[in-house]
Length: 101
View (cartoon, one colour):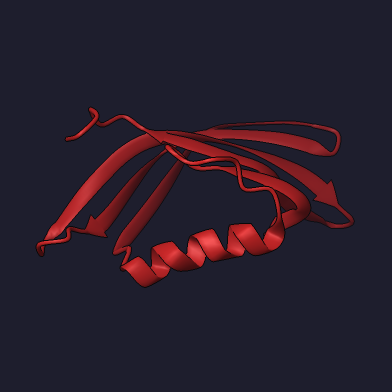
């Protein structure tokens, strides 16, 4: 899904700039027990071989003491055409939730 030179920019973390690092990041979230991820595209603007998608997300994750918590936020991804397919080249998101809450 990601180009070989893609950058993943998760909240409260350094930039992850290689395929293995991106794969490891997502695998750790899956292993941690992400329950639900919902993405809603608000806009998609394309020009030539580049497309910019903006939207919002809802993410349900397990709490350390049991139960779950839901995070709401927004994202921007930049897509690049690679041959006949589209690949993510930049992926950034952040929460709408107050810090510590």
